[in-house]
Length: 450
Image (cartoon, rainbow, N blue to C red; front, side, top):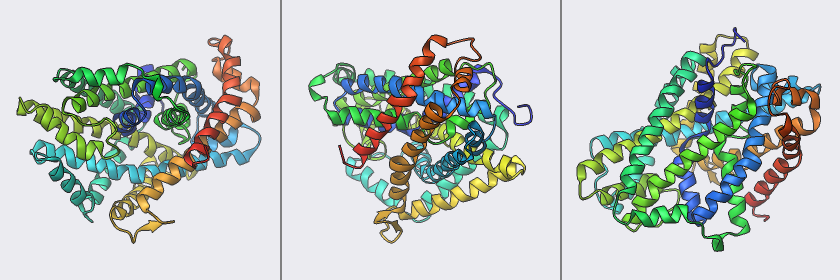
């Protein structure tokens, strides 16, 4: 453990691992999904899905990672006698590398919007903001350069190691993210007619609940917590033997949920204040919200200017906490399996992800850069979100629930019979039956079968 490094404190574990889950999906996708699926009823169902799917899934990856104290490939390969399980770790490395490549493009857009907000370049009507986004995202150079810049920022955090890089950055970024979020929430909830947005978010309307809403909530819980990327397994390999896995998973999941809920309180009151529909779609953060902030705080333009800057700074911080975790998965793999210096291993991943980012960026608005009839960026999103992530999480639950030694799993889960003994039976039932069924339902829903 000392040779590999590790987290130096319990707070560092929670903040770093929560940071891997907290990303653009919380700040953008969760409010969008909530608006699309009827508000508070969706939130309650989503919370239930976190408890039913998210926490058992997180604990399973924690068990695999901490037991091995190694990168994802070696962790899965050594967890049972069947060495073929190491392919699950390889799948996680490949998945996270692809995600980091196209995720960095969107993170680069956030950097651009942060800079433009500082100079006041987003002032104008909705048509102007929409045209600005289309022109910028379709540019062949600038978005790609910003995507690479974001990967390089991530790289220079990763090369400093677990405690001096990942943990230190998480202890800075996560509190900053939380403070920015709270400030914008307070400002948004103080607007005229903001109460309608708060009511939409917090007052359940169960008449809107359908089978599709349940499945959407399952999917959001699955993706929000980074299940299936090998990120949780990799981070858990840096946990100490005294870390309580169930308690840590519960704290991380609830922190992730809290930030997603606050993101809703940030967006919906402002949106309702100016008459914007809460289900505006994926263009919400780059087209709709700049105009929402401008209109909502028209009575005090300086405040609107500050809120806009804070919002895009928030997005940058949220993206960075996620890219750090995705970079570490591949870095740890190359560092340990190729027996090379950590800095060299990090450069391999940085170069590969930069190449992916460039081609994904170029594919936006260019029909010639496609795979299987989809722009490369959309294809990468589809491949990872709908196939690779569910496959990784499903195989992990099968490994831990059915193939691993039950005594070994119990030792890790209970910290050698010191905590959570009464909950072990419930956990085993969930990881054997509930989690696989949930993932199967998510897959069937994504492919339009149900």
